[in-house]
Length: 230
Image (cartoon, rainbow, N blue to C red; front, side):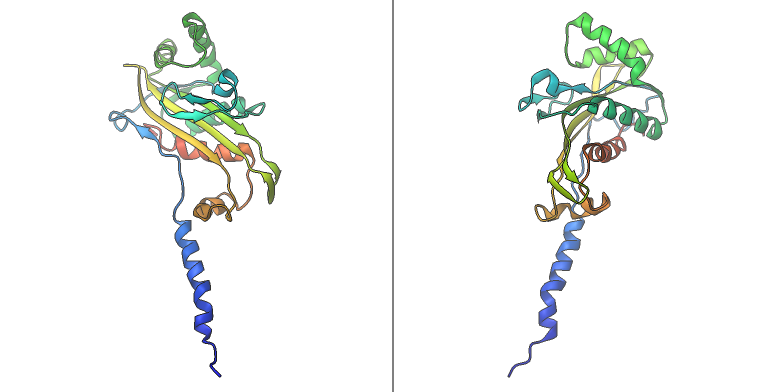
């Protein structure tokens, strides 16, 4: 009778472990898009504008082009308090990461809203954003748009429906009204069974199902690290 080779029995398990570690190295991250002048741009005074809820403007399930970065996004549900949460979190991270002085959203909002009303606009256009920066004495303005902020259904370790968040960020250089940097975050959390390729990110984030706020915070942290001048 042939005796099974213990090494042969172990090979599939070893192979699986190797594959898992290889997959863990493949993490999906938001990729900022920077213009040629972004690397040398060192703003000294930055205004942060409140996020705009694009789903409220256009309705859910609509394909909407980001007015500043040009990316097509699909709108979805946005939970109450999401705009305030993202705006406050963005302002906090910009203050932490940037060497420049930061004009807070609550101050920028008044000027920005007045200009939107004067122009008869509902959403940010680069000219209005730049004009807001000039009135505030800033040389750069950071603008965010939110398209989806859906809360999970379930708990940390068992979700019937995962959190799903989508937003865009852009930096406008006031001097020439140009978008010199932008980034997109669009993620619905998946289990490891659904997508082994996210294993590294899954465990980096605590190996659990995230709330929408937690998912958005991770996205903002990764994106703000790439801001020009940070």
